[in-house]
Length: 221
Image (cartoon, rainbow, N blue to C red; front, side):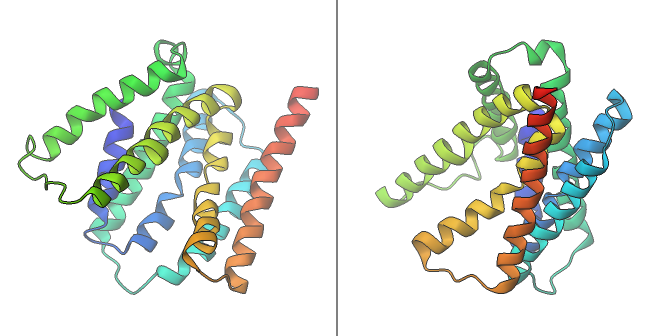
C-alpha cells in the first residue's frame, strides 16, 4: 500500500532536480520494470510481442515528451525518477500477486492505499508545517478535481485492470497517459500537433493494440 505513495513522493521530489518533461519520460520505464519483476520472481514469460510493445511505447512517449526536454540533467533527479518507476512497478505486481491484497475489492484496496498514503504525506510535510493555505475558490476547485479524477478514480480503475488483465499488460496500457494529455491539450488548450507527436501517438496506439489483440486471443483460446 505504501509503495504507491512513495512512488508519487519520489516523482514529485525529482521535479526539483529535473524538468518535468524529462522526469515524466523516464518514469514510463515502469512497464519494463514490471515485466522484469514478473519474469524474475513469478516466472512470467516475456514474449517478443510484449517486448516489442514496450519498445514502441517507450519510443512513442519519448517523442511526445521531447518538446519539453532541456539540457537540465541531474543524476540525483534521475535516480529519484527511476526509484519512483521501480516502486510503482512493485505496487502493480503486488496488487496482482499477493493473496491478502488480491482478494480485496477495488474500492477497499483504493481506500487502504489512500489511508496508508496519508501517513506518508503527513510525515513528508512535517505534520502539516510545510503546507500552504488555499487562498481562492479557483484553487480549491482545481485541488478537488486533482484529487477526484487523476487520484481516486485513477487508482481504483488501475486496481481493477490489474486484477482483470495482469500486471505487465496494465503497465503497458498505462502508457496511454501521455496520449490522453496530448488529446486534452489540443482539445481545450489550443496546443498543436507536429509530425513527431503524431508519430509518437501512432507508436503508442500500436503498442496498446498489440496487447489488446493478444489478450483477446488468450481469452478465445
